[in-house]
Amino acid sequence: MAFRTDLAIENKEMYDESRGNQGEIPGVEVKVRQETKKIKVTRIAVKDETGSRIMGKPCGNYITIEAEDIVGAQETEKKEAARVVAGELKRLIPFDYHLKVLVAGLGNDRITPDSLGPHTAEKVRITRHFFLMFDADGDEEMACVSGIIPGVTGSTGLETAELIRKAAEIAGPDVIIAIDSLAARNLERISSTIQISDTGISPGAGTGNMRTALNEETLGIRVVAIGVPTVIDAKTLIVDSLEGYLPDMTGAERYVDGRGIRMIVTSTEIDQVIEDFSDIIAEGINRTLHPGLNF
Image (cartoon, rainbow, N blue to C red):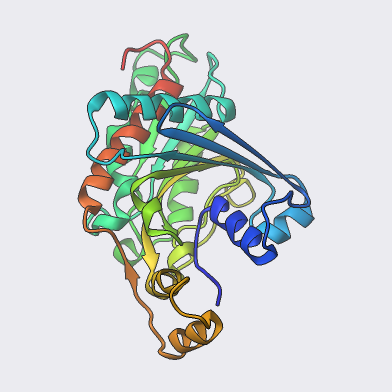
């Protein structure tokens, strides 16, 4: 049974489990850093086609930030997490005088587990109108940032990638930051994990509702994706929960598959997850794109 997940770190874990060890993966470089007592950063670099095939991910960089007990935490702890997010983003999006960025908040703000993108984009400091007002070609303290919340195809009738492509034609960004909800294998990651990658994103991939990918190939602009797992496939949750309890997991997997269960579930504290992680990611983006402003 294939476990459904958008997280590179979980693909690595499943590969390790299948081999019974945690050795090196051909074509993949992994570095782990304990950033603070409660925050760990795992950087996974998929270097070549062999690594891409094993990981099931395009070549590029995948950064996982795991923060213990961050949901409902004190403001100081959330700001510390935002600082770590900013530190990783700055590695992928170095600030310069002429930097232009389009921030795209993907998802449906009417469905809580899918509302991370819109809620985060609303909190990002948009500045492009100031640049237009003063006819400025750059700034030493802040980037030229535009934003779009494109909604979902079921509501607009328009492909998300097409809307973002048109917005990019107007704004002319150097890079697009796309924020979206993800799917995980492990329920605990719904309240603890942020993934950042420089390979773009396929909206809806984790829930089996894949839309046109948003990446440099489809948009002609580099795409940095930021996501938080907010849902888990019911089959994945059932089988993973039974591991270690049933002697025959293969039989359990076949039974669950045979039941035809097609359901996505989320945490009971998903409202707080969206609120806290949208705050953390938005502040991380603001710190990265506007280093001369106070946050």
